[in-house]
Length: 423
Ligand code: GLY
Ligand code: MN
Ligand code: MN
Image (cartoon, rainbow, N blue to C red):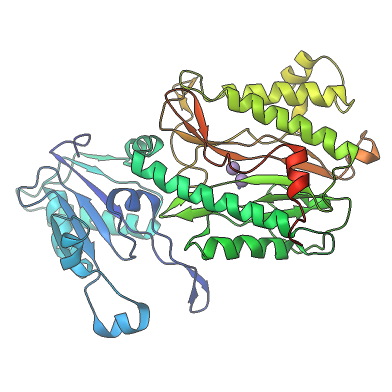
């Protein structure tokens, strides 16, 4: 509220519910920006920040209590508990918003709102402003400025508070246990979905849900970056790439491990694995305050380019491979992204045309990979169909970095020792 000032208001709608098919809905997930400011998990709500308003500066519009609806759909806080339990200064039934919000808009010079993310609400807001204008009576005022709220809010979200980091630790810890559990049951003959089931079980028994569709790709599927069919039967001699994380109180983990289905890497798989592991280590070392966003990626690119050249998979000098970005044939994504309430979290990666400096409290993933799709031209058969990614969740600290998912082994021998021990 300090940032927007007393002449402004900010308006944030809750996420709408979404239909999966006919009258069945997807599990409801609150809008991250809305939840960041309110902690309020119900749909059909609107938060208004009005720092100049005498009678209370944080308003929450929400569904009224309704015995019949609550019998069908579950409990609602109602405006009363919006004040007592959620800290609103003032709360109103959301059905009254048309009577109340236009007056607040009229008294403001600036309206902060994220346009373009919620078309239905965009139309309502435009409707309120249009109605104010068309009144046209002397003394009716409409705001001078409409300002994008997301830029300011997303910069706040980029720096995690202690409470937020605690949530991320919990999401990370459960993802680590789920990966350990999946490694333990993994064996040839199982289907990818049986591995996925281990994750869902571990997430749900901790009250969490996946933070994205789990990727369980065996053999050639490991080379499909967003594979999520998870339908194939796994064979001896193949690698399994599992990218799965969960969400605690709207804070995500995002973790990948790659291991041999039968518990032993082949020499070719091991050669690729060790390059990715070395790239992961080099990238991790580059995560510290004062380094910039792209330093970990540059470090990973160097190791991967050097490694692929050593194996004969890329030709020419390392400098030329990097300059011409030849490594992108096998490493086609970036080494990480911000992580937080969203898996690919908000926050700018550049300030102007400069990469952003890393600062304590930022959280990101480190996830180098090498993918050699079957049928890659000019590539020996023994390399084809190998896909490896190693992904961890990292907090920038004052001293350097803390790996939130560091409890999950990464070294090839450690992983081999874990695969299949419980099957
Ligand atoms: N699971 C998506 C990612 O790793 O970015
Ligand atoms: Mn990721
Ligand atoms: Mn991932």
